[in-house]
Length: 299
Image (cartoon, rainbow, N blue to C red; front, top):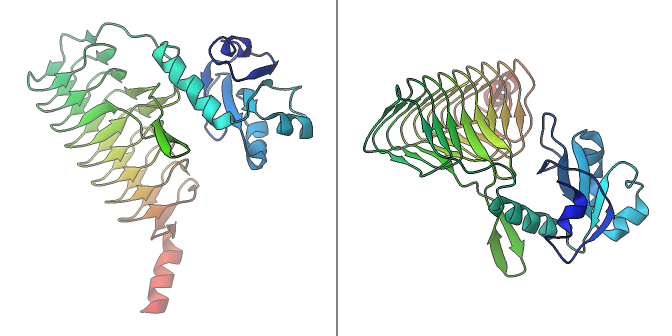
């Protein structure tokens, strides 16, 4: 899609410079090869935009454009309220199936799908030898690959939790992405996995294992062989590396990156990104050895 096409959908904007984009997204999100349209209403985020090679177009204000030389690199849409315009455009594009097209369900014959589960009416794929237990609900926009087990009570492909404050009204932002569950994943009882909001995907990679009562929010990516124990809560846009262990009742705030081969001990509240091969503990979580030293010092 082109920036100039947005003018056909929204009347309260001005196109300053044309460009192509594949999806809408945040400047702090990691993408593969997509061309991304984002918004800039506060200049403190300009560094993140300039450093993200996937950002190809921006919805911003005339004042920001006049004070910062950004038109050479980006397509520009001018708006009085860039964030509001961004989400208005997103909601329109979700309804127009911009991010992905609805299609008939594709359920492998070898999959074991309980008659007491609920499978949405379209846009669901379930691969070979996968098991869907009684009481599971699979929502449209879910791709489950081969040898996956989903235990009773779990919901897969639920709406992401994203809202826009507009004066005294709080408006919902529509969920435009999908859930992709790769081969050999197991999801235990009463877990909830949200679809991506801005056209991206929530992804559980091969051999990920989730214990009971885990919440995986929109646009999270969980790396291969990572084990997530009971009661863990992941906020949106969290990226977790391979071979990690998240302890019971750990909480990870939005936009955090946890490296490969990392551990969070039980009850950790992770508010900063964690480098490879680290163990963190506490609220707020810090390096585990430092945490233990601190506990010793106050006992």
